[in-house]
Image (cartoon, rainbow, N blue to C red; front, side, top):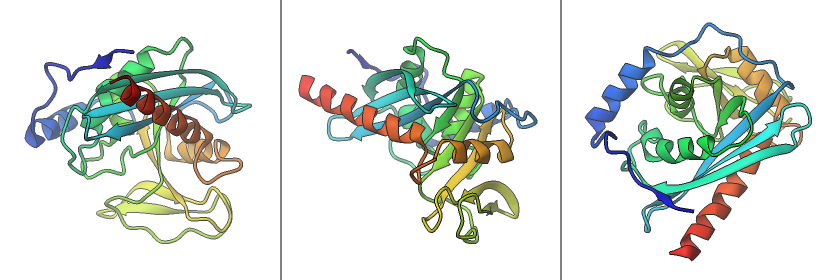
Length: 231
C-alpha cells in the first residue's frame, strides 16, 4: 500500500482552511430527509494517527443497513495533511479518507463519521465537509461533546437533548443505551436531524457507539500498524 501525499492545493494555514470551510458551507443541503434507516448501505469512516511518523490511516467499512454485516471495506494511509487545530481536524485526514472511499468496490450509501457535522464552530465539521465533497448523505456521531451546551437526556435508549450553540440546535445528545452516557449526533449533508438520530439508534443495537464506527476503528488501527511495520 502506497502512502498518500498531501495534495498540492491543500490549505497551508488556519486562515486558508477556514476560508475553505466558509466557501464549501454554502453548498450544504439541509432540506432533504435522507435515506431510511435499515435500507441500503451505511459506511463507517474512522482514522488512526501516528504523529511521530507523520502518518494517518483511514478506513471505510460498508455495512448492510438491515443486517449490520460488513459487505465491503477499504483502507488508505497518508501523510498528516494539517497541524492539530480544534475546529480544523477535517483537514488532517480528508485526503486519506477520500482515498479509502474511492477504493471501495461497493456503493457506500450513507456516510457515518466519528465526528461532527453542523455541531461545529463554523457549522462545517468532518461529516459536512465529506458530504459536500462526495455529494452523499452524511452524519456525524461523536463520542465526546465539543463546543456546545446541552442538558443530560433521559436515562432510556432513544432519549435525547438538543445540542445548542448560540441558541441554535446543531445536533442532539442521544442515549443509544439505557444508563450509558450519550453520543453526539449532528447532520452532515442531505439528511434531517430526526433521521440522523434514527440511523444512530439503528446502528447501535448492542453498544454505545454505532457498529459502523466499531468496524472502522478496528480496521484503521490495523492499517496503521501494518504501515508502521512496513516502514
